[in-house]
Image 1 (tube, helix red, strand yellow):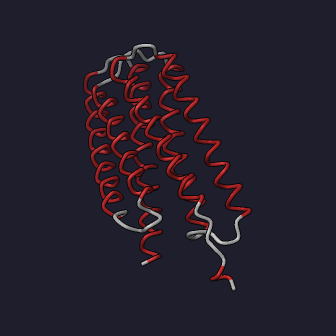
Image 2 (image 1 turned 120 degrees about the vertical axis):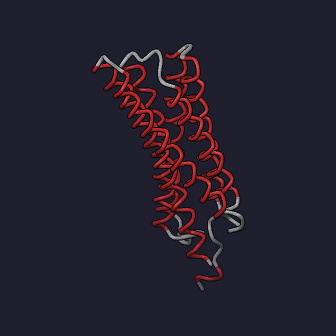
Length: 204
């Protein structure tokens, strides 16, 4: 009887919307870090994008609680939504640090890591688009993981250089924290990729 009931496919549309929104957030923080022009405007834009992400996440969780048959494991739906939302949360956290700490310049590494977040977001979006058919998902997950390793290397090298060259301890703390928050966003993207990989492997 259960097998005759259709699975709710609206989740795939919501995840596509969520990943597209994530690209917007990643692009906005990258644009901000490129030249630090109109910082307040970019921060507001990122907050609006983050709020939209929260709304989509909330919609997914409500739908999860009201759907009898889901397209894949309920736990994985919940974890994927949370992981994608976490990436956006840390993008927003980086924007918050820029305003809170009055940062008006940052090392090139911050911009490089932000660019990596954009690439990860684009790879996640491609994986999500292919999720319903369970085709060509894993290569994009592998790319997200590769990019996380690259971001980790860039962050470590930049923080090491910061300790060697920055004489102002307060400035050092501010920039170090900004780099760490950005790098954590790449970690969260990797978490999302791992969930997508799990969904595919469970369905194999």
